[in-house]
Image (cartoon, rainbow, N blue to C red; front, side, top):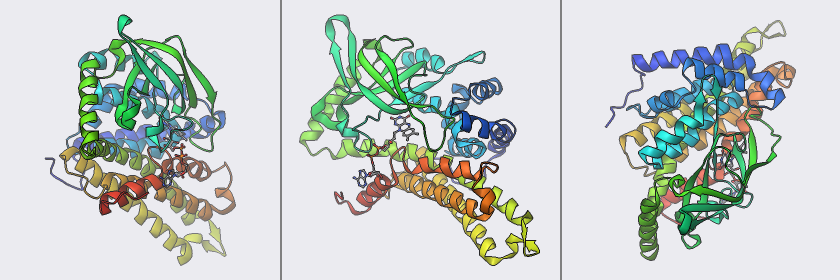
Amino acid sequence: MAEFTMELNDEQKEVRDWLHGFAADVIRPAAAEWDEREETPWPVIQEAAKVGIYSLDFYAQQYFDPTGLGIPMAMEELFWGDAGIALSIVGTGLAAVGVLANGTEEQIGTWIPQMYGDTNDVKVAAFCSSEPDAGSDVASMRTRAVYDEAKDEWVINGTKTWATNGGIANVHVVVAVVDQELGSKGHASFIIPPNTPGLSQGQKFKKHGIRASHTAEVVLENVRVPGSCLLGGKEKLDERLARARERAKAGGERVKNAAMATFEASRPAVGAMAVGTARAAYEVALEYAKTREQFGRPIIDNQGVAFQLADMRTSVDAARLLVWRASWMAVSGKPFTAAEGSMSKLFASETAKKVTAEAIQILGGNGYTREYPVERMHRDAAIYTIFEGTSEIQRLVIARTLSGMPIR
Ligand SMILES: Cc1cc2nc3c(=O)[nH]c(=O)nc-3n(C[C@H](O)[C@H](O)[C@H](O)COP(=O)(O)OP(=O)(O)OC[C@H]3O[C@@H](n4cnc5c(N)ncnc54)[C@H](O)[C@@H]3O)c2cc1C
C-alpha cells in the first residue's frame, strides 16, 4: 500500500513544474482564441505531443504512479491552463484508459498507438457511452451489438451523443448492449477502427463552455467490426455475462459493487480538473483585488473582498484534499465505504462553479467581459457538475452508500 503523504516527491514536483510551464506558456495564451473558434486546437495538441505530454507513455506513467497523485496533479495543472484545450489533450487518454483497463495485450498494442498518432500527424480518440435517452440512466442504453458468428463480426447500430472527439477521432470506443436483460451489466465495449463504414458524425454541439473541445453525436449504422474489436475478447465476455446472470438471480449486489468501485476510482480525476479551473480563477481574482483601486485603496483592503478570497482559497484546498484522498484510496485498494470518489468529484465541481462565479464578482465589470479569463473559466466550470455523473447522481451514490438504502 502506498504510504500517505501530503508532500509530492521530487520527481512529482519536477513533473508538476514542467506541466505548469506548458500550461502557462502554451495553453493559457491560446485559450481565448480556441474558445472563440470553437474548434479542436490541433496545433496545441501537436505541441503537447512534441514535448511528450500528449502520449500514452506520459498518461500511463501518471496512471501507474504508486502514490495515486500522478493523474490528479497532471489534471490540475493542465486544466489550470485552460479547460477546453486541456480536455482536447486528455480526452484521448480517457478513451485509452478504457482499452488499458479492459483490453487484451494485443488490443492495447494495436489500438492505443493509433489513438494518439505520431508527433507529425497527431490523432485523437473518443469514448462513446451516452445516448440521447441514456445519460444518467446508463441502463437504458439502446445501441445494440449483435454477434454474426458466421463471419466472426459484431454488427453495431445506434446513436451516441455528447461524445468528446466524436466523429473526428481516429479510433472510437463504443459501449453497446449485448444482453438487454442484464441492464448495464449486459454492456460491452468495442473498438471502431479508423474509417469503418457506417460510423459518421451527427451534429456538432455549440456549447456554453469548454468550447475548444469538440463534442458531437456519433451515428452507427450497420457498423461491422471484427470479433477482435470486442474489448477483452468473446470468451471473457461470455464468462462475465454468465456470472452476471447468476448474480442477478442471487440479488446482484456483488456486480453492482464492482461497477461502483470503478467509478469511485475514476471520478477524482474529474475533481482534479475542477480544482485546476477553480485555482486558476482564484489566482486571477487575488491578483486583481491587490491591484484594482477604488476609494483610494486596493479593493482587497475591504474585508468583504478579502474574506471572500480567503473562503475561495479554503474551498480550493479542501477540494484538492478530497481528490487526493480518493486517488490515494483507489491506488491503495481501500474500499470506498463512504463513496469518497464521488464526494471528491461532487465537492470539487461545485467549488469550481462557485469560485469562478465569485471571481467574476471580484473583477466587477472586467470579470464580465472576455478581456479577462474568469468569464471563460466560469462557463467552463459548469461542465464539471454534469459529465462523469451529475452532482445529483454523486449525491445519490453517496447517500446510498452511507445509508445502504435504495434512495431514489
Ligand atoms: C461537454 C460534454 C462532454 C461529454 N463527453 C462525453 C463523452 O466523451 N462520452 C460520453 O459517453 N458522454 C459524454 N458526455 C455526456 C455526459 O456524461 C452526460 O451529459 C451526463 O451523464 C448527464 O446525462 P444527461 O445529459 O442525459 O442528463 P440527464 O440524465 O437527463 O439529467 C438531467 C438532470 O436530471 C438530474 N437527474 C437525473 N436522474 C436523477 C436522479 N435519479 N436523481 C436526481 N436527479 C437526477 C440530473 O442530475 C440532471 O440535473 C458529455 C457531456 C457534455 C455536456
